[in-house]
Amino acid sequence: MSANKLFVFSGASGVGKSTVLKQVMQARPELLFSVSATTRPPREGEIDGVSYYFVTKQQFEQMIDRGEFLEYNRHNDNYYGTPWPQLAEKLEKACAVLDIEPNGAFNVKAVRPDAVLIFIMPPSWQALEQRLRGRGDTSEEQIALRLTRARWEMEQRTKYDHVVVNDQVDACVNEILNIIAKYTDEE
Ligand code: 5GP
Image (cartoon, rainbow, N blue to C red; front, side, top):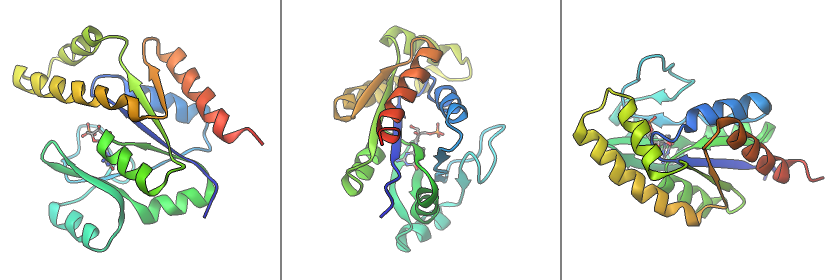
């Protein structure tokens, strides 16, 4: 088995996770991003095979039957999963970064106990609520659902190996880079 690490990130919607992860990947370009498969439709600007592998429900279920997922989960009425063959290939070369929700993260930890689980927190509950409302494209009902989900996700943080707060993006990125360095640069 390869000694390259899996860094698994979670954080509630609105916490700024994608901005932080983008900067982390820019600072450590050797890290490889695990592209998930999903049945949700692409959002504007998302590229198939880069942001996600966008597949149909039938294709996703065939992938489940063929045992192709390291983990998968249903979330917001859609399937999301980490395709293992692609990730295994990446891990042969370097450490990998996963951006998945807590249930997926715990399933990864169950089969890969050496995976490093990192949870990104908002500076405060108010800040998260403001960021979710600030997006402006979401109905009150959607906001309420996301807040309930966010509360549950934040309760899961005690099961992570590391918790970082995204108050200032640069500081948060640096903290994550220090964590990664601890696991990768020790020898
Ligand atoms: P979004 O639809 O906003 O891109 O993602 C919704 C949620 O699904 C996020 O919390 C994201 O981290 C999670 N997610 C993305 N890919 C995967 C995956 O492969 N497995 C699991 N379990 N969750 C995922």
